[in-house]
Length: 406
Image (cartoon, rainbow, N blue to C red):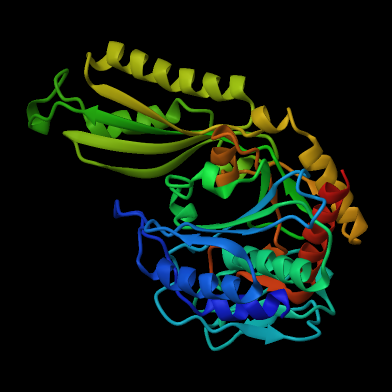
């Protein structure tokens, strides 16, 4: 079976995770896909299959005789999708020999346009997979799952020599808890790759350092007609906080390795207000400087308006996995060699976000990310190509061969 055929099947099983609950998995529907995958893994001949109550699915392909001492290599993808545009049945649509021009997405009123997605002309002649425009497609990350199981099928049916291969499919990546219950010991790999997002040939091992910043502002509310030198308007203090941040260091104006302050939520009235930010930077020193700036704003505004007016809470979320991967750069060098061997140009770029791999790397499992061949995730314009998925399968197959020969 080809990778895209698996994707078409998996995409129709709804698996949105839910950030509003504390159960794990956050949505029972993820178990529906896990059961389907477990059965398929059994049919392929994958061994040591284990599905736990938290929806972590593990499996192994034992080493070819004589290759038992080779590096135990892992491949990981997540089963959940975002919840946005995921409230109805997903209908994958195949467009063969795509012309690289505007493509109407079903009867949704939406159009996949090169004016917005400038890469589309480069996909001319490929077989394009989209949704009907009313939902996500779910290639993030069901394409990764499909590619890993297609790799497993190739290894087992073609008798490709290999060291120990470890496979895992995880829940709740999209809400940031995908590694909460991950059992590194059970997984059994020395090194691993997540397959999640990005074009074919994309290799990522540098992600943001990340924290959340929450401001609570307590005002002093009195009648506006008699409030001179007395009223402290919490909403105005909130506006002042934002005005003190660097205006160009926001997502709209940053790229590559540039970090940002991202205001995600604001609420309040004269008496109290709240601001929530995402703080991101690849460079650890710049990241700490951003946190220092926020603390300085808290200090200065409390000196100006009175102690207790502004309360800042910083919550660290994840670290840049490059701190770990820099000690095992063979993961990147071998991925580049695998891309080239499969006719794909390797593209080593930073992740402007996070990944399960960054958490796993700091849990003792160095784990960079590989692209799956898709585009425009997290919305109704999501798309991927059959050829991009095939190239990704070729690349990870070559990666297995390289580690078998090392």
